[in-house]
Image (cartoon, rainbow over all chains, first blue to last red; front, side, top):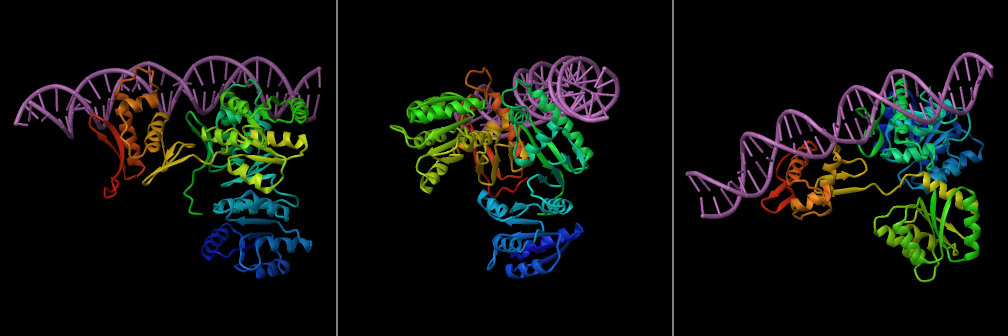
Length: 225
Length: 225
DNA sequence: TGCGAAGCTGAAGACTGGCTGAAAATATAG
DNA sequence: CTATATTTTCAGCCAGTCTTCAGCTTCGCA
């Protein structure tokens, strides 16, 4: 698997490149937007990772130019601004995925692999966290199939990473705010989900915060970042 | 799902209310800004829809008053002026979304549902003091998890930095002024907290002021033992 | 210097909130 | 209509938290 990585922050680029290579992903890296566009047009990549903020030619411009040429290579945009605005612009311009800096390299890897594995079509049906990759179309996490409720629950966690979710919230989200469902439903399904995550061989765990709710955590000596 | 809708154009309000109810959203409607603020403060709503232009108390004023009270209910602002200006003001005042008139009710419904699904996105509640950083959402200080009581105690110190807190005061805050809890509770939990702060490797200490209470101090020279 | 009050802390026990296996109900597939 | 998968319900267990207590240390004052 070969990707093109356009990023002007040298230090970051070197670190990320190193980790990607370790994950068996061949990387062509350049700091220049125009060079990046050139390589993207003339090389063959399984995926492009473009920083938005670049001197000269921005990541967005590269993306637009490519799509104009009919190039459909999967593209992940990076941006220091975690503003919705950037994300929207990126997706509108034809990006397949978007990642806000700072990010864990493991996450970037998960997304790259996800994008390459999948043939065409828009992203967003894919959600990732650490070494997890949830596929909403098939309702699977790292290959393990989830039931409808399990999936909704996990999806909620993935859409709000690093946030503690109260039982009441999860209940409202998964079962609807009107149901007379007891908190115990959530507990039961958290239990199911944990089993599935274990089965998926993920290092991600669901931690209970007594009295507050649950959150996803990644038990790992993250050398990445 | 129940929302509060403050809108002075009767005809519009009636039409919108009708459609919202059809979409299974319970609506409390008022034409008065002051009444709206009152209801918002004393009722429980999943979402507020406020027109900006109102006689007397404007939607913006309602919003600001609410946020000042620490109320974090999702708010959608409506405005006849589709000027960027209004939108910016609304968002700055703490609105979660903005919709320009005229709008399709379907869009309003979609946005209400979206906001209600989302957990209260309040910027992570962080409190700091010297080298301490307390995360109220996860109930952790510098990574160390606190229990409920420990957390409330620390929170009180952090909200009143450099002030000596009497035991009676802390007792009332954490255990409620009605409980027959003895002063010793505070001592016990101060002890626990100290242990946690040490574990967190912080240079902040809780100093007892004999006869008065406790206060936080930063022993800059005291290496973490 | 010695005494009492104030403060500290370890530990035992009570009390939850949270976890999970299993059974019952329900939906879905075959 | 039967078989299977999923969801709902229940109940007991467990671990983390809170209370309570007792003995110890520290401090201020006579």
